[in-house]
Length: 155
View 1 (cartoon, rainbow, N blue to C red):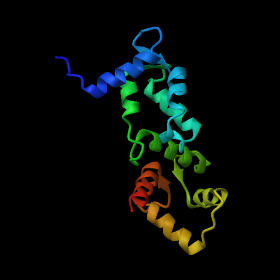
View 2 (cartoon, helix red, strand yellow; view 1 turned 120 degrees about the horizontal axis):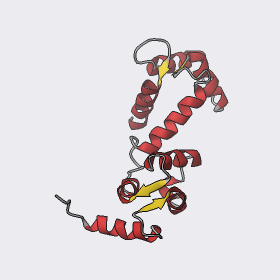
View 3 (cartoon, rainbow, N blue to C red; view 1 turned 180 degrees about the vertical axis):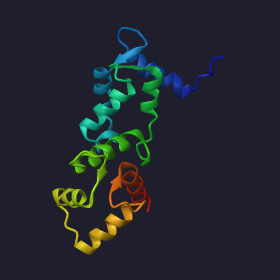
View 4 (cartoon, one colour; view 1 turned 45 degrees about the vertical axis):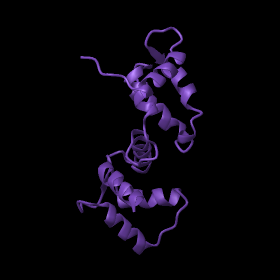
């Protein structure tokens, strides 16, 4: 059974077809990147975030089909929970996780805050560290990090 296409799908297909120069039903990740790089809604994202997202979107093949194109074009970047934000948070987490054990220790968090040019007093830092350590194990997982960032964003 075929899914009925909407007017929006048809318009997206027209845009996709303009990029699909050789009419193979897929566009190169390079052409796709050139197409999206001018999007105003992407100006807040680091270029490496966009590159990682494109690689994920193409399943590391270097090619984007219509469904993946549609997935990107309809991505709501104004919502906090989306693929681009997750990639950006993961990159930030990995930068602070200097020993690459998959967790941020209080020492790594303190260093990350300092490198970001922020100053937080010891008592404030302790409260923040405690707030982000949901399970009380003295370190922060990516899940704890992203969940608490999202919670702060939504307040």
